[in-house]
Amino acid sequence: MLLFALFGLYLITVGLFPAALAPVNLVFAGLAAVLGAVPGSAWLLAGGIAWLRRGRTAFVSAEIV
Image (cartoon, rainbow, N blue to C red; front, side):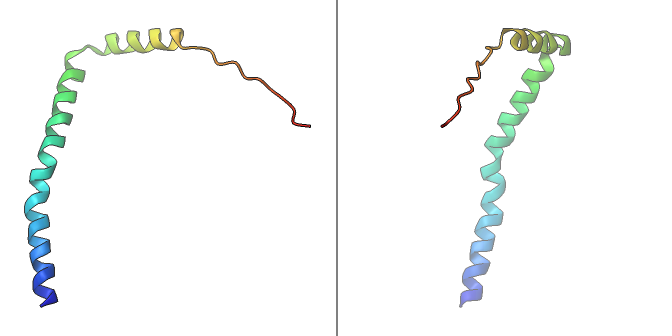
């Protein structure tokens, strides 16, 4: 009886897993389309600007006595 229950669970998992992953695949396909539509030089320029505009964090050193 347990074997039949496990087999049923296996069939449900195998049957539903591809359908559950379909939205994730669509999101990644859309992200790839957006990334591919923008030229690489624009991504490099945006990364360089973000790097130069990043906030400098001040490190405060304090001794615990």
